[in-house]
Structure formats: structure tokens, C-alpha cells
Length: 227
Image (cartoon, rainbow, N blue to C red):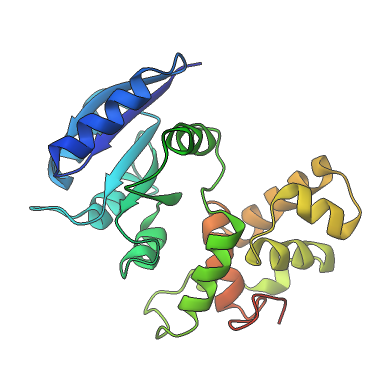
């Protein structure tokens, strides 16, 4: 299966550089490029990609609003969006994740990591390494509560005690293997638990689960550990 990708950035050299790297992979095809959010939306509607690499700061329509529109529940062809940013704790990162992004990459990302990121997101996983997740939570703790909270989607009480444990570990940035080792269960069992957590809470992916875990008090803001 070929992963179809659209690259969106107002810097032509960035767009063409990413496109050139991805097009060399046998399982990835760049099906279009756009220089701003409005052009990106029109392009995505026309070519229906699987993944969009989206710059945050662009003219006409920024990447956050474009992402919000492309990942809205009512869209006919929802896509996975990976935000491109210059700094790993960009002031807009949290807003971008809430808008529907499945993760983010630094613009100076290594070639192999870029390719891996596209494949990971296309497969349905969120792109947040454990170390980055912990830093996000640390920084998130110092921000005012959002007007519209992810944790408002469903009460944590709908989870079983084991599912709550899984959510806490997700919030700490643990991957499935680490969760399995911590709870002494197989990765297949972990995947089942993660799927149920997302379904019960009405969350899109692990990125939203991390945000939920902090907002609901499952993860402590200063230690990154369970509250």
C-alpha cells in the first residue's frame, strides 16, 4: 500500500526538500504541495492524501485552522496531519494538537525520521516520542486551562481500573511495549486496552489521550507520573 502525502509550507525550499526525500521511498508518493492553508484544503479535497505535512505559520490561513477543517468529524475524507515547526515547544503546538494534528516534527528532522513519521502516522499511530510527551506535559502545566477541554468529551469514570492505568501510562509517554512490561501483559492486550480507552473517552488518538490524561488529573503536571 502506497502512502499518499501532501506537503504544505510557505517556504518553497522546505516543501521541495521534504517532497524529494519522501518521493524516493517505494511506499510513499507525494501527490501535491501547497504554500498556505487555503490552498492546502483545496488540494486535499482534490487529491485525497493519507497524510499531510502542515506548517503552522503561513499566510492567508495558518496550519492550525487548516488542520481543524481537514480533521473535522464531518469531512468526507479525513486525513492524518503532522505539524511542521521550528521549535519543539512552539507556542502553537498545543493548539495544533487540539485542532486534530496527530503529532509534530521539527523542520530540521533527519531524513530517516521524516520517512518513519509518515509511515507511523499513516498506520494510525500518534507521533509523540516519550521524551517529547513528557516535556509537553511539563510545559502544559504552566498554561491556563483551555476554553474547550479535551477532557470534557467523556468522564474518566467510564474507564475500568485497568484502562485507567493504561491511560496514565499513555500520559507518561509510554509506548505499547513499555505499557505491557509495566502491567505484565502482552502488547496485543495493550492494544486492546488502548483502543477501548480511546473509544470510551471519544478521543481520536494517543495525542488527545495525553492531553486528556493531564486535564483529567490522571497524570501529574510536574512529575509526569500518575496523579
